[in-house]
Length: 384
Image (cartoon, rainbow, N blue to C red; front, side, top):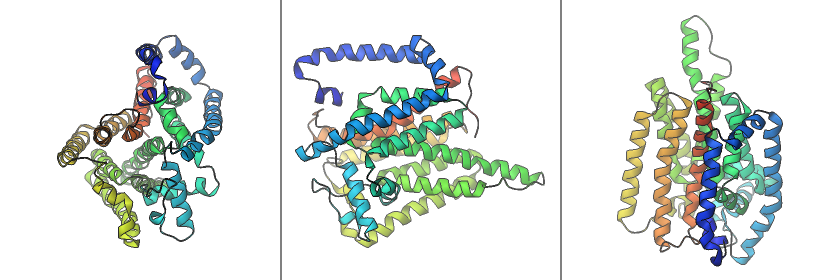
């Protein structure tokens, strides 16, 4: 709705309901075995179709991103990609990345681990491909985890059919990337920490621990720690995933919480101590435009806590349950952030910058939809 209200000429606004009805019917067909669903099932099962969609995504990004990014010289667009660039350039120069400012004179709000993950794109001048990279990586892992290219194709088609996706991606917002990276980290953890159970079983039978299991667990924790620093609020994902792991034993759950939480805190602490006054990821919470008034932060915190407890309690040790509960718990937190920004802007949809927070949960929700469709077609995902 933000994209429609921002880019559709006012005389054409009466056509917006028609557009919404048509897209609803197309999604209904695609997700309930209609004509488009059958066509996608035939094409999506082929690897070349996935490759073709991936190439299309990168070509469209390479074509549109430079034009959308140039809007910053008209004081339009988003500074999120520029924040990663200036922060990364400061970091590789041995300077504090949080003393850098964007072209708008704004501070860098991306966390240290996220700046590090973006460095290859910053150093090669390809920051425009940061979003497509994480999207394709998430789709590829969905393909491998669920045993077929159809789920990956459906995941990409559903996301790429969204106006909100394109508005965020081509403008350089990193919210889609954060959502995809959280999805990737969740899949990685689901797979890697499952090896603990199998390793214990093998040892009890006189066997040896599965080769590489410990390395995979370490890498999965490092990835989650870096992603969870993308914005300080995403540390919320660590106790959430630790709660999911409790069904594999409290030892695994507590070990994961201590290691992942400790590494995330260490990343924040190192850069905070470098220059406490400049550490914008933390001072962001004192910004009145972020969570207006005094009551709203309390409501947001309480809602987030309730959803955290509920998701940890009801999540089953199944991949589909993990991503559903991850989406549900994050959606409440992101809605609070988004609504707080909307209220601060007097409910002006075209100026609703906080709507970007909802982009984080889009890939996770779409992944759940795609995997659910595969499961309903009797193509059950592998357990990891």
